[in-house]
Length: 183
Image (cartoon, rainbow, N blue to C red; front, side, top):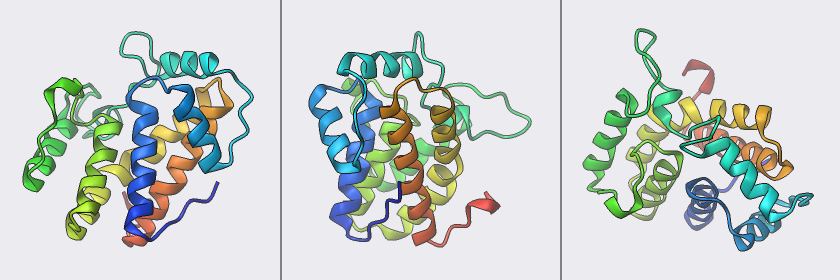
C-alpha cells in the first residue's frame, strides 16, 4: 500500500484515522471507513478484528503495547512503559502548548496520542515542530512497530492497517527529508 499526500487536510485525515484504530477496539463503522479508504477487503467479522485488537494491543493481554518507550530507548536502558521516550514526548507536547486530557487515560507516548499530536502540529502549521517530532519519534519507532504488527496480527485488517501506517510514516519522513536508515 503506497500512501503519500501533501495537502494538510489529507495528512490530518490519515493521522486521525490511524490514531482511531489504535486508541480503542475499532467499531464496525471505523472498520468499514478504513477499509474503503485504504482499499482493504475485509475477510473477518468486526468481532474477529476487535479480538485481534485485544490480542495485539490490550494493556492486559496484548503482545504489542503501542508505546514508543518500548521501541525507542537507549542501549543502556530497559524498554518499559513510561520510559525516557515518554518524558521526551511530554516535552514536545509542552513546547507546542498541548495538554493531554486526563479523561483519555493515555500514556503520552501511546501511538494514538503521538498521531493526534501530529494533527495538532499540521493544523497549526508548526512545520519545524512536525519535522522534529517525526525525526525524534515517529520515524524511529513506528515502522518497527508496524513490522511487529504485520508479523503477529491474526487479521488481514490489521496487517493492512500496519502496512498502510508504515508506508504513510515513511512517506512523511521522506517529505521532510528524514533518512530513516540513519535513525
